Image 1 (tube, one colour):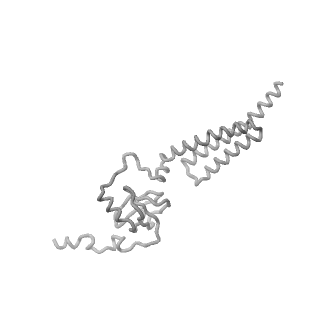
Image 2: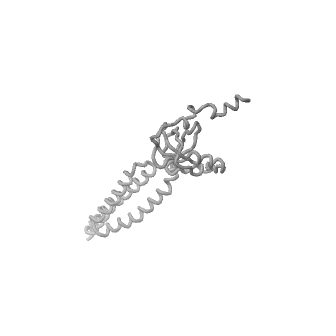
Image 3: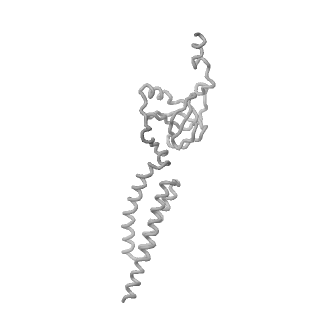
Length: 199
């Protein structure tokens, strides 16, 4: 009788043990995805681990399978919710969602905002790698900017497509810098040297 009870306990504990090992591995994959974005590969492995945990549970009986399934239904939303809460606070998350550091947000004067709105359609070059935020140079001036979702390499030509608050939105373009966009090609009169000579 005791031997049968021991065998029954072993049959239940073993699949549960392996199932919860796989479930724990899924949580680890989700945590790694938060800090080491893999393009969805770690998230895929997490899903596979959860499915494998449920399958292993049901392979050894209905009760172990349901136990693992219920555990998965609890662990999955908690893990995803915690990951979504932590991710924007990570360095990579801040760059992806463009969350400025606390106290660093500045409200530009209306006149300066309107001046920046005139940059829409202008061509410039990225001075830093943009993933998606960074800096661009337009007409010899450096601006904080963000791309419309794609990565931009330093030196790549970009076009201003929008102005949001204190950030300029740009996108890569095949257009080339024209004399009007390149300050080195502009005539001296555009910089006010004619008025200086007349003094």
